Length: 551
Ligand SMILES: Cc1cc2nc3c(=O)[nH]c(=O)nc-3n(C[C@H](O)[C@H](O)[C@H](O)COP(=O)(O)OP(=O)(O)OC[C@H]3O[C@@H](n4cnc5c(N)ncnc54)[C@H](O)[C@@H]3O)c2cc1C
Image 1 (cartoon, rainbow, N blue to C red):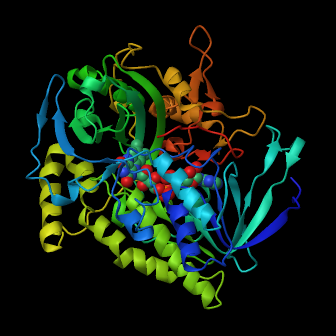
Image 2 (cartoon, protein in one colour):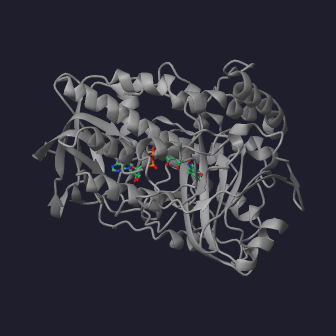
Image 3 (tube, rainbow, N blue to C red):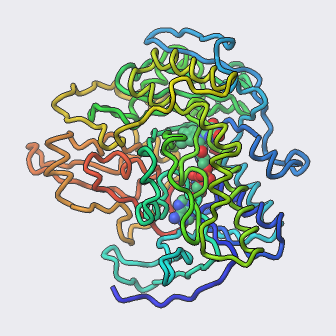
């Protein structure tokens, strides 16, 4: 394709992604210097449309950013009142009492929130301060300067034909240039991935690790609802097949947020994470809670799990990685929103100081220092061994060893086991299909458990048909020639939205790989888990994908 001419707009700071990290950065910049020009670009149709968290929010990030958030009407309405931790067996459960749990796992002082609504409120705060927030604007390319620095991004390209040529209503979009460009795309950001590779940012860190998180919102019988109760479970149904577990948060209005996370380093390519979630809801205690209620929303998103040892270098000439674009989730707490906010604040402070000093397009090393020595480091270092211990020894041993490690870190500020490595990437962890048995999943009953496509319709996902497929196969022959014989093509199962299918003729011959890109909920699991690393997720046109109401 010929080089496309685009208009450009200069800003002081360009921010990619209106999640908690990006919006915190925008707000902090304007708090420090109202005269700076700041733009936030978001691919969702509105702020919050692509936000999917549990969520129990530790308000420490918001406290630091907007101390009077309560007076300003932040939607943190449900303080956590009760914390349960259960190990499930097939027919029952065992409650682990709270006293042996390390204090950092305590949820008192936290809030059950819709992070989508929190982000919508943060966007309002940002706009009141003069930030330009543009939803429906997918950033599809990084713009580099003459010296290899990041100069800006391309946003808002619309109207390409499926073959990549320009259609009748083609709009080239714009280049948005900044003295600094902050990438807050969340987990496995498509531009962040390019930057990590280009600047070799991960050369001194362990591979990033991920989980796949799936979530439903249910309205349940008020008699069973207990506003402010938080329950986490482990054990059944995953057992030894994979790490992971569930969360169940009683929010406002008789709603519960019920979700399931499957660690993506599972070995058995027959595992079907979505069906594990559906099976989990059939546990007698969970089913009893849901019976008589109705599911009102569904969504899925990957979650970063590598933690401290997987953090890449965060800065490069002209920009920085924020929040889960770098991977700042505290895994045993299943929390990353607070660190996303703290990272946004720290990056903003570094950018404003640099601009005031007349700098531009260099490395914001002050931001890197803040993350590596400040509150984010304190939070992540304490729990750094939990995930690798779990991967190596399974649930029970990791509860014991991880418990000792977290208690020592909490009481004495030491990790007695040093820093464990993660080793393989999640794609590399996948083993050959013939080493494992297929797993028999019960058919969804349509009341408590649902098939994937029915559930998908509760995510309000939408993509225009007339555009290039945003799920790129680097080599189109690999799904059928390599992944199918070796791994029983796991894309059919790991995708929580039914994007990937292997179609055959009636007699079972002639397998063909089909990509239903219109179903994609932007979780990025395919980009992470494909054993051949052959699927590249790129952003579709802006305004597409899921439209989560109040996830
Ligand atoms: C199932 C699940 C449960 C979780 N539960 C909790 C919890 O209870 N508590 C907690 O604190 N954390 C929780 N987390 C983790 C939390 O969601 C993340 O840590 C947090 O979202 C990171 O914030 P972020 O701003 O970095 O990224 P995100 O929140 O992912 O925001 C990124 C934004 O950037 C946009 N974007 C991405 N790429 C582009 C692009 N190229 N152009 C334009 N826009 C783009 C996205 O649409 C999105 O709106 C959970 C995660 C999952 C998946």
